[in-house]
Image (cartoon, rainbow, N blue to C red; front, top):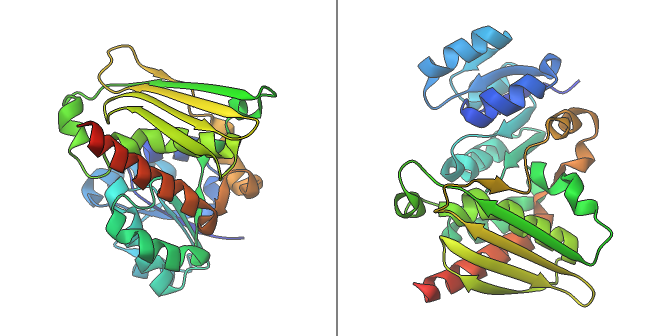
Length: 250
């Protein structure tokens, strides 16, 4: 049986992943702020590792990276170097264009966990998909937008991935808006997906809500939610093309 180490101890790990995970397979956590993670480890009977090297020495063979978005790819690089047999990263795997070539080189070595791609709403039989997301940050949308990855990588990535899954990887797209609000339309010969977003709204909406069964599927039916990173190259190509068009709107 594979033994997992979870990188990260934030809200997703604490509130969503661990309460729904197969704890018999998880040996420990790695946290940027270990003192804050001690209570979580005690609550779930997990070890607190100093880093990936220590986890590997303890017989861990599977890494699941759920740390801050801009740290994901650094952990991927380290895990590949250390020879872990299974390396899984949450989205976004990369947030900087400068990492894209390295991502393509390393992508045969690891996978991505596409929790929201497996949402039941994507099984609609219609030829049209309509998705909405509205959210706000306590810091304000402009402050959040200046952070690495901004809303495109932290939120819209799930929706762009869903649109490509629905329409096919060769779908074309149109950008109507900027980083904070607008619409993205993806279209193929027989399908169309529209994503409407507003990250300055006080009325939150998310049509790709978290579903606990998808966490359990990571252990029991991993092919449903974990896919090879090489299959995500088109996703990141689209995201960087969208970013270029966002810049043109500002």
